[in-house]
Image (cartoon, rainbow, N blue to C red; front, side, top):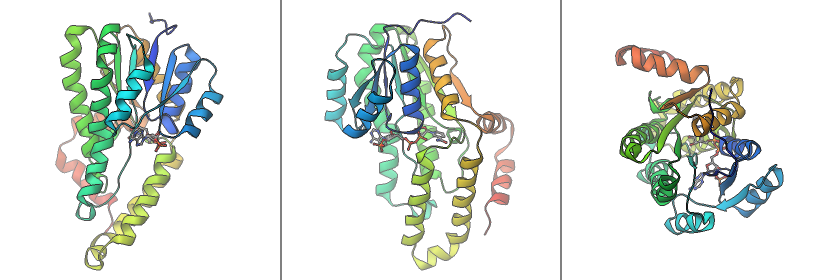
Length: 284
Ligand SMILES: NC(=O)c1ccc[n+]([C@@H]2O[C@H](COP(=O)([O-])OP(=O)(O)OC[C@H]3O[C@@H](n4cnc5c(N)ncnc54)[C@H](OP(=O)(O)O)[C@@H]3O)[C@@H](O)[C@H]2O)c1
């Protein structure tokens, strides 16, 4: 298949300190892109630069901080940017009855508002290059799992924003792709387990009696799913590279068998059937 050459093309990857973002940044660097890797801590930036093969540069960037976003655009300091990979994200687990408005805001602030703020800020450079926006969503951007309602809401929103953006940017020759990974073992799963434990601790006794056992089972199953997944961060990085380099990138990419199957079933099965499948998995 015909491919675009990465040589000399600049890309920004948000949330590159760990997990999928880190692997993507290093992979794109090895391919020959000029990579700006978004990090929130200097140490993470130094570690990334040390691990890189080419000219990767750490880019201080907190997607929820408007000044930080503005400074990041200045640091990139070019008139064109080939690719923006919106990867930064968090996952807030909780039964919705136990989810505080602040935690919901935090979830949406990072995954949705932050991604849009960063996209807006870099768009003049991407438009000038007639380049690419790649949004990392999730298999949970199609099917909302119980206890991950806030996270699924953020990923459904990312899917919708990607659709609107793709249609808005088409006249300018900018392609927008969504990457939907299934379970891939990264630090996000440890963070989910830790936050889940905090949610369990904070449950009021009356509510705790309703959800404790089932939520605990969910956390255990979640952890097991991530640990047994055969999909790797490298698989995801290769897909992101395809979205940046294919002459005709796909609108949606699923990464991993679970993501492909989930996407297919979400399209084919009625909600009542999906509800029954979740009801079997959620023990009361
Ligand atoms: N792993 C999976 O199974 C999976 C599946 C589907 C989708 N995803 C999606 O893939 C993306 C990456 O997840 P991951 O698994 O690689 O998780 P991860 O290892 O926890 O990485 C998350 C990254 O996001 C950054 N981040 C968090 N809040 C930020 C903020 N306010 N500003 C800038 N960066 C911020 C983190 O930076 P710090 O280190 O500074 O916190 C970190 O670099 C997420 O959007 C996630 O929803 C992951």
